[in-house]
Length: 299
Image: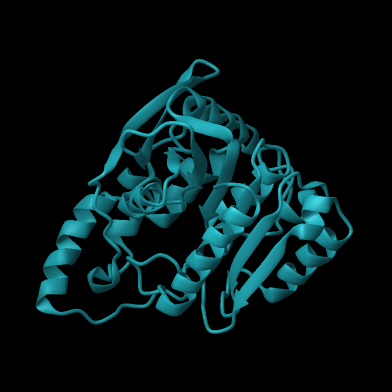
């Protein structure tokens, strides 16, 4: 599991930014959209850089599906009036499925995908109701078993198949905590490709997190594109090198996996609502992610 100091290092690059008067009012609205949890209450909100994708031409909303007797909630977005569309699972940061994650789903839906963001912490608690990092880690994040997450993602694909998605053309992408999950699911789940945004690659084994991406790299079933920041203080580049070595000795999907490292970018460079956002890296990474999915049949 992630230690408190590991999680703190993920946010070392998040520094306050400047904003116009209009930006300040937008920050107020964004805090409401993001929720009252750690992301909204503690991190600076950069309203002027936020990408906002309208829902016109889409069907969007809440979803839920059953896994082992529990109703897993989430959010989805898809092109209106279409079925048999490719599917992308969108995996949250530690802050849950707030507006940034929902907007990412809408961006993908505008491109013809059924995008699904399950609430991965729903059994353990609501991260948007926690305003302290220590509590978020101790009471929610550290209690989430990888096995539970994998089963919930299987359930999300079953929901997709019953709601207009073509799961034979499924992919997965995730950010930070979700980036790690992307690697793990690509090693066992029925997806054709994954895109991992700055997900941690190594870690200590525990009962709930028995393996980490470097441990499953050689057995990937789907190729993964890793998008990482060279200035990320929480993910040293030597761990990227370890991952590359494991991939090179692995399956065909492992060998097909790739990394792109943006030298000047830190952690969370795609998170447009935070000061960590780096427009050039985020836009280039998004372009590469879409091309990756197309190349590997998620289209």
